[in-house]
Amino acid sequence: MKVAVVGGGLAGLSAALDLADAGHVVTLHETRPTLGGAVQTLPEREGDPEPPPDNGQHIALGCFTEYLRFLGRIGEGGSFIRTRLALPVLDENGASSAIEPSLRALLAYRHLSLKGRIRLPLTTLRLRSAHSHPNETFGQLLRRLGETDRSIDCFWDVFIRPALNLPCDEADPKAGLFTVRTALLGPRANSDLVLPVKPLGRMHGDAAGAALEAAGATVLTETRVSTLDELEADAIVVAVPPRESARLLGEPEPALEDSPIVSVHLWFDRPLLGRPLAALLDSDAHWVFDRGSLTGSKPERGQYLTVVSSGVPELLEVRGRELVERIAGQLTDRLGDAELLWSRVSREPYATVALRPGVQRPGVETSQPNVVRAGAWTDTGWPATMESAIRSGRAAAQHILSGISARVTA
Ligand SMILES: Cc1cc2nc3c(=O)[nH]c(=O)nc-3n(C[C@H](O)[C@H](O)[C@H](O)COP(=O)(O)OP(=O)(O)OC[C@H]3O[C@@H](n4cnc5c(N)ncnc54)[C@H](O)[C@@H]3O)c2cc1C
Picture 1 (cartoon, rainbow, N blue to C red):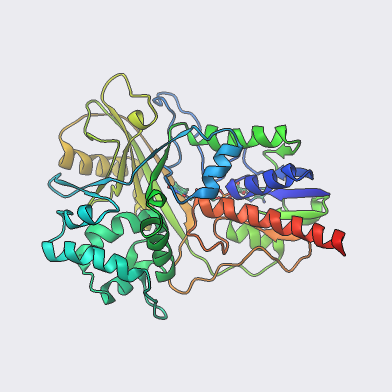
Picture 2 (spheres, helix red, strand yellow):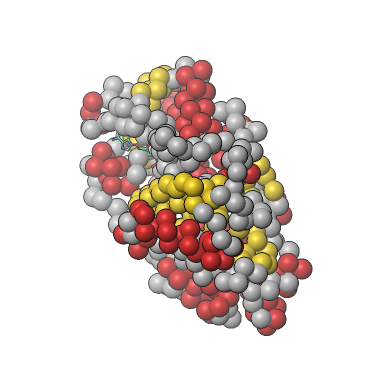
């Protein structure tokens, strides 16, 4: 059977691989010159340090089983480091305390009062069976269970914000409950941090393109599909963002908002961060990564950092130089003086869909026979992550494959 896949992000790539591995004639169409979609390395500029900056630091967790399997399938199973979750969180004075999935660590979390710390494990356990109320946010649910503004700012938002790309006070409670139950209340290894050690483009798009070609698929980059009618195929996977998906499928636009991610890459003349990564309280710099040490490629002097701000639309409006000064200033105020040698900004206004209360996401099936939908934003049950993208692609491929086997059986 001939299958066309539209979109070369992780969803399209994983669908295409499953279909090619099942022996079908697959052609993948991608608008951009590179594969990987939202998981990209920025186009090279003179003066960039090694490794080249990505469009944004990507983090996976131990519970991202399909994503990890995908990396293995494309030959990149060794391209990440996996560590137990132990996230240093720095307050306004630079004082550090770590978030770890253990009772001992929760009770020692010094950014909260003793009362606040004692409440953390109790609330976490209560989240195992908690139910959300209609129109409530995850923040409201947490407060209903006894959490406070301070504990939400200093503990819950530290990991819910990057996980859902929204703060607790804007997030769908079901997505918040899913995240806590899967990552923190599941088996211990579920909360492991998985961090890439290679440029994202190389270990995702480039590697998946090579794996697809080795499996016999045709990969067409710089090929925008303007209508599905132009595709000669028995089945089609539409694996593009929500509005483009609706346009191609002739459907009304889904009522889904976007949530941005802004990343600032900074090379300082001296080391500022004494660990591979840290979260900062009360700062636009939500998480900071030592890109040099994480990728095993430290600059000849100083430190190469990547700073990520998740779900902050107001930062999209701040102009480049001002944004760099603001983020670099927030780091040096807290971590010590340093001169900036180089910087680069990456703004992704459509980084993920915003999973707000009551959000509805469509599933694999479309109104057209033999045309299926995929994308991190679809109804996989997961937040709009790399894991969701891979799962959606696999579900789309499975839908096509089970349609064939049903026809063969009949
Ligand atoms: C800066 C940033 C940081 C992130 N951090 C994390 C993280 O830490 N952890 C995590 O799990 N997730 C993270 N994400 C989210 C994750 O990257 C995405 O959810 C996921 O990669 C989306 O994959 P996708 O295949 O569904 O969509 P996309 O990656 O958007 O792929 C869709 C593809 O379709 C192509 N396309 C569109 N229209 C057409 C057309 N008409 N014809 C042909 N091709 C078309 C596009 O060019 C694109 O390549 C982050 C995203 C960003 C942007």
